[in-house]
Amino acid sequence: MNVGVCYAESDRQLWMRLEVPDGSSIKKVIELSGILKQYPEIDLNNQKVGIFGKIAKLDAEVKEGDRVEIYRQITADPKLVKRRETAG
Image (tube, rainbow, N blue to C red; front, side, top):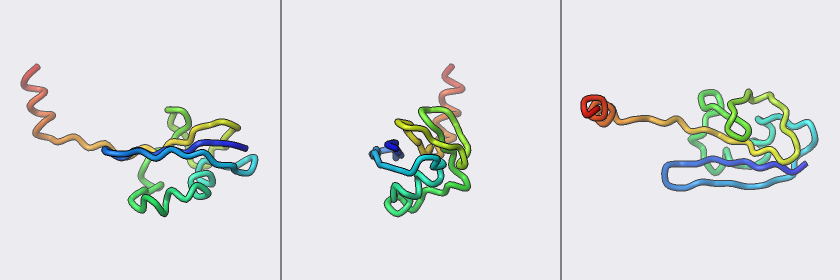
């Protein structure tokens, strides 16, 4: 079955399509994609994953045409957040 995998950093993104066995889980798709070797900072124990923008568990089964997404943690600069709060 054909699925996509994507991961975005602040300055670049990776999107790929690959063939995986029917019944593959999100975790299996990510492992088969090789993305964990390209981006060793990805930590599936701490980062959320999903399909088409909806959070899902690593053991969720993917379907034909799904786009598996690995979400990076977004951090906000506390000084910027405080400035926005006081400006409003």
